[in-house]
Length: 239
Figure 1 (cartoon, rainbow, N blue to C red):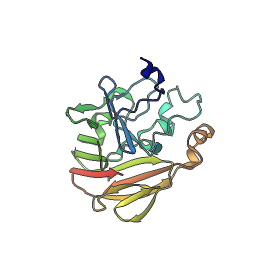
Figure 2: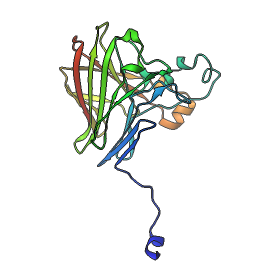
Figure 3: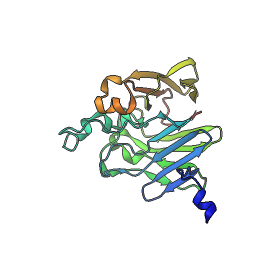
Figure 4: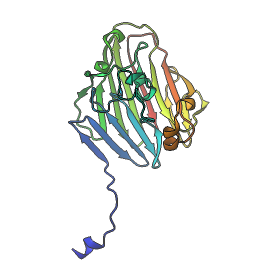
């Protein structure tokens, strides 16, 4: 007992967490931490963010969820989803055939069962409107020693316009090689034959509250899918 009493209290660092009722997975591998959520878009204080994930590296935010800015009349009114922080296009999510996710409890993910710790596979097709023409969109996030591996495995019933993968960060992105986006000392590695990258400075969207949380800068990284095929599999890794 005396030995336990002398132990200094500290926050537990759990390698793997799965909360099935909330469809939340977290995993820690080395200096990388990932958290991913499923659920639905009718939850309390909802944002349209089914299937989104965040990544911390070296105990600092790398790919982020912006959270919510200063409350206004619109925050809890009928125009809630006109606010950019509520929209899926400003979370780490796909925009599919030009469509973003919809709000409402019926717009939800389905968990694809697996027995591997630190991995979550969700079919997020149900979070988008029928007009998006999505048969399945299976997003698998895996925490590995080599990094956070992500697979986007999808089947659409048509192509209306190129789909995009969108990510938010407060670190100014750069691209010195064709197959990687650099975020400080870390990278998002991808197949340049599959994806075309562009970077948007969205700092002008930040209000005072968000600037106090994140600092003055925020960026959106957009990977546009090159393939015109309705069935495809995209892989990329955060290292």
